Length: 251
Image 1 (tube, helix red, strand yellow):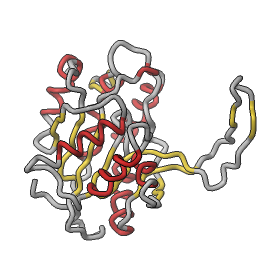
Image 2 (cartoon, rainbow, N blue to C red):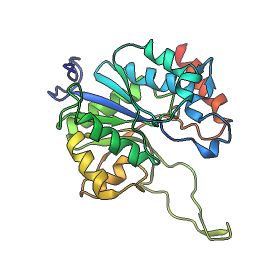
Image 3 (cartoon, rainbow, N blue to C red):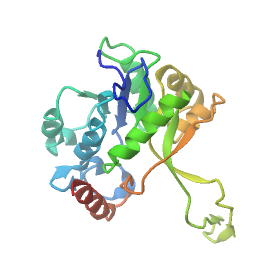
């Protein structure tokens, strides 16, 4: 892979390439359907196709690495394989996904380190949820611009707007924490490959996102304002909202 990051005149210059990793080995148990949610139909295509296409809309991303489980048969059966192959050579599939997000990302990065066409240690990795198909191109560009200028890494996020409640074991309100300076994390989350590998090894398989892993190295990831459209599809009803966001983006 010889592609390098930004050549746009309005964005910071970096000699490091940008790669995206999409962990898609999970089954999405909360989704409650026979097919994994990344293959759920969305505007006539499997959801994962929209997710990959959103990342490819940013020309500074050299390659998108889709991480599947070794025994994933739904990728072909759902029609996702054919449609993603049609997106071109900037997409590649890795069948090394694990039982958790952290394992999928960690195993994918270890695999990429052995590939001649994989990223270099100093390259940037953008990890994006497979179930976030509506990532606006403006939000993605904003993350890349801000992180390249900052140099430490960061993630898309939104300031918490709702009042939060902490529950006790019986699902009764235990307390009302202040929402001041609280942000809801989104993806992509963007960090240097070498640092991310070390962070995931230290944090272990239970870590819920890359920013949390990076915190174990003493890093303070940059919070970059995301977009409400960048929702994570968790329940079947979320598909209708995702469809609205995607159709609105076409107008």
